Image (tube, rainbow, N blue to C red; front, side, top):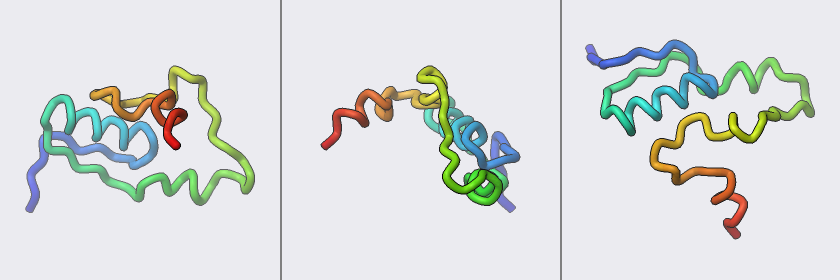
Length: 75
């Protein structure tokens, strides 16, 4: 049996983001239940793209290392 501090039900963008934040910032042992991003893979119409306002693109990046601005400057 594995014991965790926080159980997160749902492995979509917000569940994965919450788990990342809790692990990185709070140092908590988390368990995420669900198949990562499966809803998007199976239920979003073909050709549809996820589009979010700029402020919603950095759901959890506690260390500020994974910003879109940084990604844009790669390569």
